[in-house]
Figure (spheres, rainbow, N blue to C red):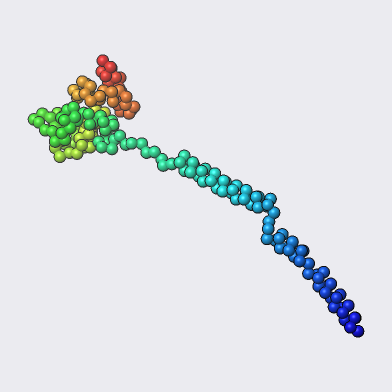
Length: 200
């Protein structure tokens, strides 16, 4: 009886030992917790590849933004006087004629461009340049030189060109060169003469 119970106990212990295999359990835990080196290197390379691709994408975006940039706006060369010619022309004309004195006034001449009073009244709706802004005076100068003027009674006074100013004929302030180089349709007819005078 006792020997039978002892045999049963031994058989039960063998069964438990066979089911509980420390080496197998240890191998499974090692497999779960420790990844093979090849997989770990693959993971690192994948992260580096993603990081490199991210830098490349950022560089492409920066280049695209810089290439588009902000549209470059051309300088407005007529913003001061608003005339047919560039502002430099009217500034030179005013300096050469009156020292750029907007209130210039004598018995015969009026305004910053030194226009004869009768001429000023004929090509404008004013008797003189008194109280007029540089833009208003420039409008009269353009009417005389390039545009002509229609008076209140409907009579049209034709343009006479820019050479009525002695300062222009004499090449003061490089105005002849400006007229020679101008591509404005109202100015090109005077360019040949201006070029001849500038080169003569």
